[in-house]
Amino acid sequence: MTDQDLIIDTISDANKFGQTNNWKLQIALSGIKRKAILARLPIISSLIPRGSLSYVGKNLPVNGMIAHGGGPIHPGGTIDDEYCCQHPLDLDPDDPDFIAKTSGGLHMISDGEFEPAYPDKIIGNFTAANRFLTNVSKDFIGASIDRKVIPQKNNKERVKAFLHSVVECDKLDRKIILEQTATFAFRSNKNPKEWHEPITDSIHGIMFFEWGVKGQRFPGIILGGTGKYKGASGVFYRERLLAPNFAGAETFRITFPGLPRPDYWPS
Image (cartoon, rainbow, N blue to C red; front, side, top):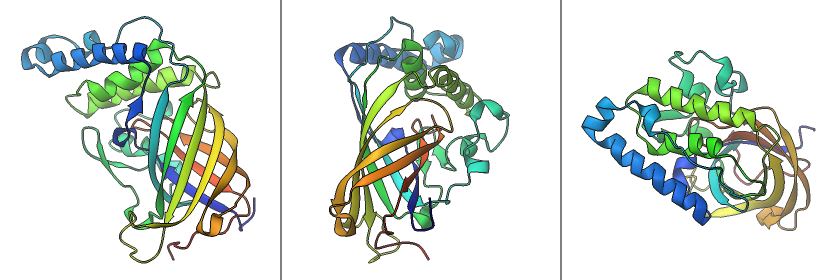
C-alpha cells in the first residue's frame, strides 16, 4: 500500500439497523423476546438469575439470513487500535474503560445507545447487507441476540453478557462465511458539521469474509460508484479491527488502493 491509497475506518453499530431473518430464526427470537418481557418484571428480575433467561433451543439453520449493518466513516488511522480495538478476552472486565476499548471508542450513553467516538472526523457513512452463506449455531445466535434483548441491570452484567458472545464468536473463527455488499457514501464539504448532507461521492463494493474476533484481512471487488468514483473498479481490502464490538457489530479498516480522497477530507 502507498500514501496514495484511500484508507477509511468504520465502526458498525448493530443497534441502529434492522435485520431480515428466516422463519426458524424468527421463532427463536420470539422465545428470546418472551424471556426479555419476563426479565423486565421486577419480581422475576429480582428472583431469577439472568442465566435462566438466556436462549435455549435447537441449532438454527440460518443459511441465507440477511443482516443489515452500517455506521460512520472516518479517515484511516482515526481509530486508535492499541486503545479501542483490543481483544476483549485479553482485557480486565473490571477496567472502567472496558466498554470503550471494545467498541472502537464508542461512548455508551445508555443501555444499547452509543454516541460517535470521533464526531469531528466523520466523513460519511456506509450501509451494508450481509448474507450468511453457512449455518450458525444456536449458541452464537443466542449469545449475540439475547444480550441485546434482555435488559442488563448494570455495567458488570453488560460486560458479562458481552464476553459470552465474544467467546462464542471466537469459537467460530474462519467457520462462518458471509457475503457483504456495501456502499461507502462520502459527504461534501458544504457543511463540515453535518455528515448526513447529500452525498457527492460513493463507492460500491462486494466481498466475502469469514467470522472471527480480530485481525482477519479480506479482499473485495469495487463495483463502481458516483462522483469521482463513477466507473471505479479493482480490489479493496477489509481488515477486521474488532468483532463483535460492544455495539453488537464490527470495527474495521478499509483500504482502496489507488483511489483518490473524496471531496471532503478533514484538514
